[in-house]
Length: 191
Image (cartoon, rainbow, N blue to C red; front, side, top):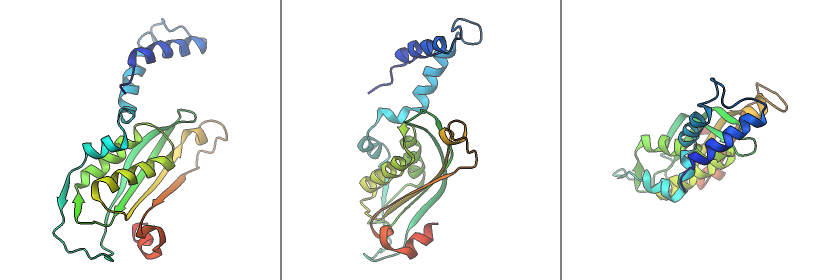
């Protein structure tokens, strides 16, 4: 599904009117077009399913290391910066840091692909919890590993700038699969 930039322009113009402003004044006359282009960029991930994202970034390498079934060897990529927009208020989720860890199962994914997956998943109207689940689902499809962990730390402007207005509030979520779910020592290694 392609993002309908023409419809966005019409609706942004209507929002400007509903806010009591003049969408034809100098500072606002190009705002509907700018917002439509911005939405096309920041919501790019809405054009793709998790399966499509997995196909897009499915660049793996045969793992020549001899990982045994009960191996504790793992790959961890920390501090992947992302941002997203919450689906409840369309408010910015910012200062988000993602950690993705997995235990290889015969193949490894290119490290930059992990960051690209996190970035594409965040470019949707989202919940922080679903971002972790989506990343884990895509990683499992690409790596064939059941042992995946995704940790996310982020601030939500729906908590910091409106409503309760708690600027220091930070949300932490974790998606733990396979051995990460029950192995406390493994969990500690990614913290």
